[in-house]
Amino acid sequence: MPNTIHIGFLIYPDVTQLDATGPAQILSRMPGAVVHMIWKTEEPVRTDAGFSIMPTDTLESCPNLDVLCVPGGPGQKQLMDDEELLVFLRRQGEGARYVTSVCSGSLLLGAAGLMNGYKATCHWAFREMLPTFGAEPVAERIVKDRNRITGGGVTAGIDFGLALVAELTDEDTAKIIQLSVEYDPHPPFDTGTPEKAGPELEAQARSILENIQTSA
Amino acid sequence: MPNTIHIGFLIYPDVTQLDATGPAQILSRMPGAVVHMIWKTEEPVRTDAGFSIMPTDTLESCPNLDVLCVPGGPGQKQLMDDEELLVFLRRQGEGARYVTSVCSGSLLLGAAGLMNGYKATCHWAFREMLPTFGAEPVAERIVKDRNRITGGGVTAGIDFGLALVAELTDEDTAKIIQLSVEYDPHPPFDTGTPEKAGPELEAQARSILENIQTSA
Image 1: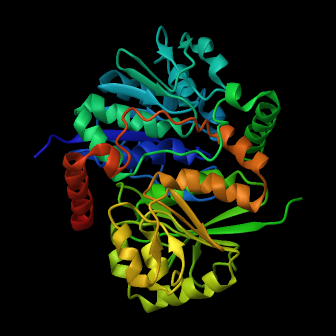
Image 2 (image 1 turned 90 degrees about the vertical axis):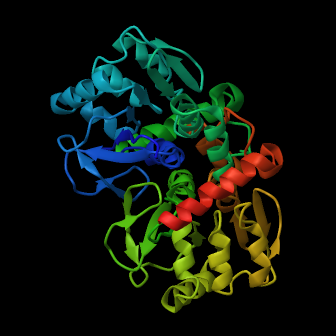
């Protein structure tokens, strides 16, 4: 039997759920993996996509994690000075084999003091905020610096999840999981970064992101 | 104000959650979109990734859908002759603008009689079962035949979601949402289809898929 690997995703009101559910799907297929969805209470947590996820653990009941992962989302703003939560992230972050994030989750790791002196990435629209927390922004989809692994915006979580499986096990396991989820992406357009999309679409994407922030 | 567009995902015990949560994230950012997660009861629905999703609607309370989407998953086997559910799918499918699926969800649409005479796709491991339901299998990531739009396995739901946004609105809206979720995929490996992965990894991926089926 493979050893148990506890992988914990923080969730919170108005989390961008795909930041967590993408890598959770990938990582759940790794031998020995146990996926945890963690929040302060056991009540359903509403996401920014119109539905709710049930926590599996609270900050107290959560076991020591092998992998801590913080997803991004509009609700994150309310947590940047939430001492109870930051204490949890610091405690788990100190013991975890990997401290990770998807999207703007790297900023919340930063607020907990866990990114100081590390290279990191973030959603393109928020990457410039990384230096506030002593992190060095890198415009790549996945950035690994020692045991910090950060992913870019939302869908980067799938690439991140596969890279993390390869780190935790081996490349063949990651390749098999990639095949099991038929990850042979064919985006219908080529507008996945501001450089590719151009300034007009970038301005409109920023407006969508602000609307999610405001309505949440 | 844009018109409301009701987009409904069937969920069920041991659904492959990314089949639904991937396109739900994309579609939720479309102006006017309301995302529904639908099951028989209002209790949390456990997914095949170790956590549960809350339904937003039951079969009875669900409004008439503009888009019906059926995700795949190991729990689907139990539903193939569930008359209450098949009646729901038929009723919604007759009124919906688009009848859609991700992964093996096309087989459940088929069981409801909704794919007879249509071209369709499915997760690569289950695609050969489509003719059982009168559907013509096509080995593509997204297949559109009249108002049926079917996606391939799991992660195909993200490409599918963007293509559907373009159908329901316009290409620019889809391009802006693609940028907002930074969908510029860089898979760490090139093993997303059996043809690319080769027979040895394919055999192991089939074994993973069977294990998910068995343990669920």
